[in-house]
Image (tube, rainbow, N blue to C red; front, top):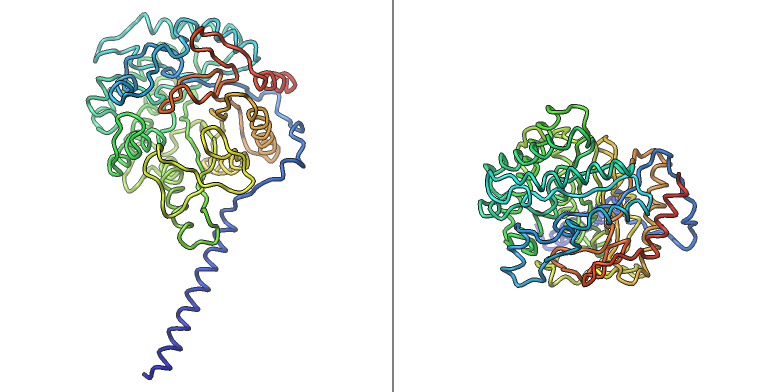
Length: 451
């Protein structure tokens, strides 16, 4: 074959490849759109919610209770991090904090049960602490507020961490035993439960990025923990449903969206789709098929009566990604507004997240949505945009039952310490004084107007 023929064939092959790549990218751009609304042209007060819609706020035990002895307090000490310490002293101030809930007019309160407080050492059960949680539940019910406990929200006993925590499959029996004991104490009054909060976040932050305990950096361990957390969820779901078939059990899933930095890049698209699959797709497949990342997860198929949706933002991704949150410099879109945390306010993504979890076919409870905003300059707009999205999604037929704002009050924000302020109430951590922010009053009025 002469040189001219070789050149012709090579040119033809290159042309076919280019056409194929352009076609593939065009397909991806259409299948996975990244909408950006003209918010200035939208009436954010034009919202409508069903009378039975549930309004709430959310917290987590380690972030507010104070004086814990768990995997996080050990990690804070070992790493020289800002200590959680007294936090919001909620363990002592819970009654006055529940007054804050009543003032807002919420119907639901999502909170977590601290395993390390109830079982400080293996087999040692703290009945006094369990009675305190029971009193909390009774008080919430007396106020007309639905208690929504989460059984694992990033924290567990140090002794369980030393055994490997979720990294070891044989430890799941102890987690299940804890969940069963709490359930047996409260299920006569509590109807709605979350098993685990954000299993993907816990796995990646603790075992890939090293910013959560145990501070490891191993993709292998990350995938193992992701699967074991779903095994733990499935085991607990099946056990609790046997105890009380009529209860409603779900988990809280953080749905973070991953969009390519350059939407015409043949490199950025595969990176974005891979991250989207690992963060969101593998988990959804587990719930729908009982299989996750090449492993069978017994009992996981259909193991949700509802899905708790936690939504905050989307990430702009490309080939070169940082390996530690301490190094993160979030890629930015022109004209996007950025939060104190550094990621964009992207309310449009909540619509995409709702559509994603809707495919599971169970009701949706929005279990977290909020923004770090110390001076409360962004939170009012953030709140209104996201609630407009929820209203529109309900209008179009999505089965969304509730919205829980993160958070009731400023608290200890994990690896970020106390510098990120998410609360509808500000907290002076010296005096423990709570003050309703302007955004909290807006939320209160929205709730009142919807009833």
